[in-house]
Image 1 (cartoon, rainbow, N blue to C red):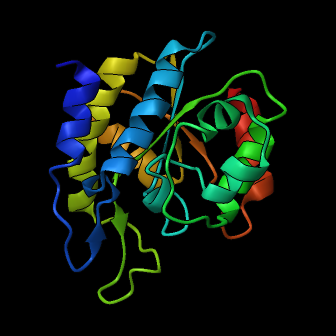
Image 2: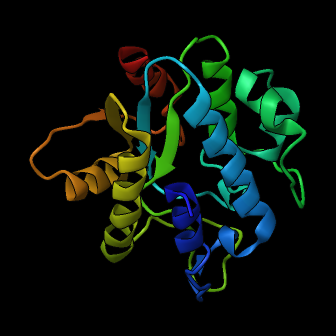
Length: 201
């Protein structure tokens, strides 16, 4: 079994709870993520890893691929989205503003970073699965274990956090290092996100 398959297997073992939805309990989402990893492992150029907070209910919770949405796959002509569009399966199509901002931005760039999250599952308040909440410190600690494995597999040349939780997760994995902070594009952060991304890509 490859290291990627072991990572996918570990993701698929985490149970749902009243406040966490694991998209990788669905086979299609695991397969989608596998296609994403395969594409990223095989692309040339500088390897950049960007770590966000957690899957959103309209985006990664449905697609299984961080910082994407069904609508982004349908409408944005980025090479990665185009290459994966006919390979992935989606139970429904949703729009997520973060995914739209991210991939519209990347469509004008030659470098595509690998995206991940401080907590790889969808955190939500009890009884509110169609909403988002920030992951707890305990959840970020679990996510740091996954992040460490992914970092070992991908071997990025540069790493940064998108949002404070992303930076916090990176500091748990690599406490002796400092990491660049990129503003998350949600809640009016688009211009600062673009500014931060321009300093990285």
